[in-house]
Image (tube, rainbow, N blue to C red; front, side, top):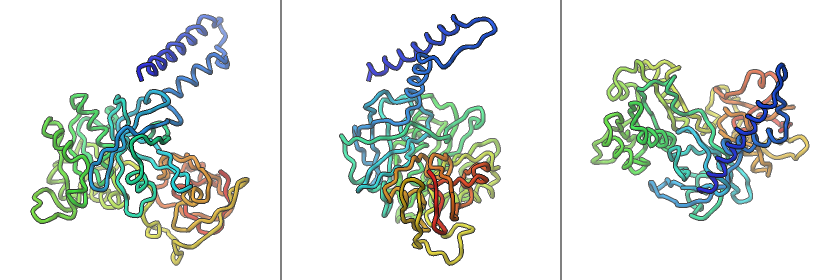
Length: 391
């Protein structure tokens, strides 16, 4: 690892030397030719070190967190880990039973560590989560993208009074932020309300309690929706009444929200009722809806198991179900599609819709120009009839 880091620094020094060389050769009234092979190669290598498109990862350790959640601790084998902002994610590429797919997973380790932690909770009937929790073991190798995402603390915008609302495995980006903040001697005050179904489902509970005990700038409360007999902590849902009780006046505070879609559907109206303006709410994307047929605008009478054909221009035709994201159907049909967020925001899986109609839920981050030109995000597009697309 030390030799790799030294190599990285040498690349940066070489890049600086190239820039200085061009400045020396620059003539008055004439620009710099940035097409030089030496210049472009140094830029390419430096950008690749800082923002790798792919990373080769080896599992160093598997850490059991709860009966249904594990942390996979990785080391990078093809170079040093790149810098990232606490709260960002990587997209982990997997091949499971012959199907090549990917899943975005928030990084739970802090920036600067010599390992990369991805914490995964197994979902009932889950495809990738079950594979990662049940099958992956120490020594296994996987591939991921570099860190991406915009769910991180921005001091110039967010201020120093923060409220974190987490649900289930939505605690993972907050752990990266909290671990980083503790190492920085808490540059902000934060209150965390963490909703879970039962006490056994609370991930990182012991570490969160220790962090809260060690600093008066961090307050932590688990909120249990199915309180067992004898439990004396907070119970119920994270609603406006609980927010008023635990947070007080919302003025001047920035609220971060991360959890399953059902949590967003419940908490966003509660935050509005509590008096939090929308521009003071930061939310992480959390995949497609669990049941797209319940989304506003879903065609009446269309069954989720209705089947359509999707012709991918120049490649092949696959079968797709109305109630499944088009991206999943393409992967199941043997087509590898570039994807990052799988939540309709990043546009990595963008495709041109040449014929046919698709349903996209409200809130999909599709640019207006793409909408006018007939582009769709495959991860949150659902076929309503036979399609022809170009990827």
